[in-house]
Length: 135
Image 1 (cartoon, rainbow, N blue to C red):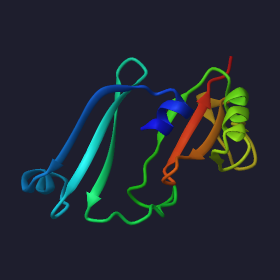
Image 2 (image 1 turned 120 degrees about the horizontal axis):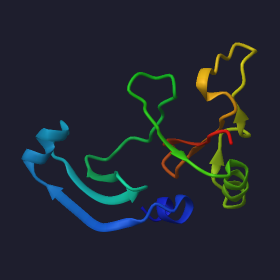
Image 3 (image 1 turned 90 degrees about the vertical axis):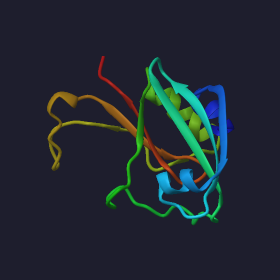
C-alpha cells in the first residue's frame, strides 16, 4: 500500500481487514486462506483493494500481458513524460519508453490517436499502465 501511495499518489482510506476464515477462503477459492487487505480511493469513484495472503504462501507473479486472466490497472495522468521521469528517478521498473499511439506499422488507433502510454510494474511485478490523452 505504501508503494501505491508514495509512487502513484493513491491514498489509503484507512479501511483494512484481516481474515482467517473458511467462509472467506471459500469465496476466494483458496483453501486455508489467511489474508490482509487495505483499501484506497483512486480518483473519485474507484476503490482499489490490495490483498496480501499470509497463507497459503503465494507464488511469485509471472503472468505476461498476453496470458489468459492477466489484467492491469490503467491510470490517466496529465503529463506522462513528467510521470516517466519521476518513475525512473524512483527506480521503478518501467517496461519501455513512453509510446505515442499513431496509425501505421501495424497499429490502428481509432479515437486513441495521439494518446501516450507507458507500462510499469509494482514491487510484486504486477503490470500497471499510465496514459495521457491527446491535448
